Length: 383
Image 1 (cartoon, rainbow, N blue to C red):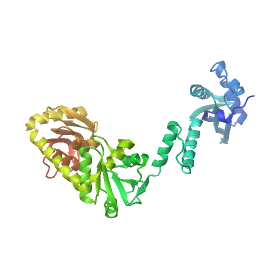
Image 2: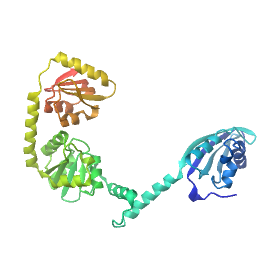
Image 3: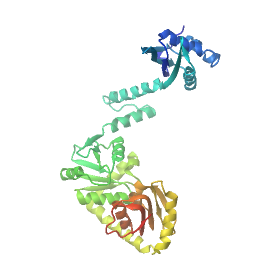
Image 4: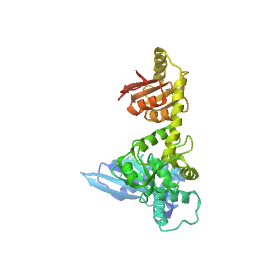
């Protein structure tokens, strides 16, 4: 009888069984070969497959409890995926083992090669740490190097902020974990993330001792975040991603170019003044609308998103500019490239959203609930 080589095993079939009476291991193996005979044709005959080394030695672990037998079957396979699943399904047709009624159920089919690949990758990461950058062999090598870099991400401070190596005097502050991962992947190690748009106390403390470069997305949302950080921490430089792009999606060359083009904070704030003038002009250009007309358009838009936890931005022609998740409303209001007449939210309008509407001159904000809207300039419509 041919034996299957451990190297050739592709899948391991795991099955559990129950029998109404006491059994021995040969009873189970005999039932497997005997009751599957002829089910799947000559090409998938279990005895022949084992002789040819296409399935391996079937292992059985069993115990008898209260006069009944229970156990586990392990069947190694060198067949392909579809053939292996056919063999596994055939096991479930067995209804007797030895002299007693029984049932078999497949619990899982494991791809043995997958676990081997995981082991190879993890082991290679450790080996790579002891080597200089050498010759790269295709995509697997590149992936390995990137994962080796990003695996160095750590948690810093009481807020457990994602960070690289910030032991030096100069650090780069970005918005979130995805931004940190992208910079580490592209060999920029002195980076720390804020884990959101609100400035953590840890960043403010770092600014007292280190030179901070704030690296923001290339949209209005990034500029709003920058203003909040600058007002609450000592920031030396501001770097901005290319127009319309986020830090987390930049390629290596774009990251380095943006950092080279960083500007002093004072210069950045002067340029922000021009943006405020543009927003004021948008506010003046937007015509005034009758509230009853707007309510009708808003409710029509709400009916289309009701129950979806979405939101829509509407222009002066009552056309939808954009449909987004309700969690992304604030950023999209700030980053919008055209004037917004109304915002409709299937959910709660939170304070940052109200402030963003006032910042961009949005005339109407409709939502199912409002968490806080004190001193809001935008007209509120309850849905």
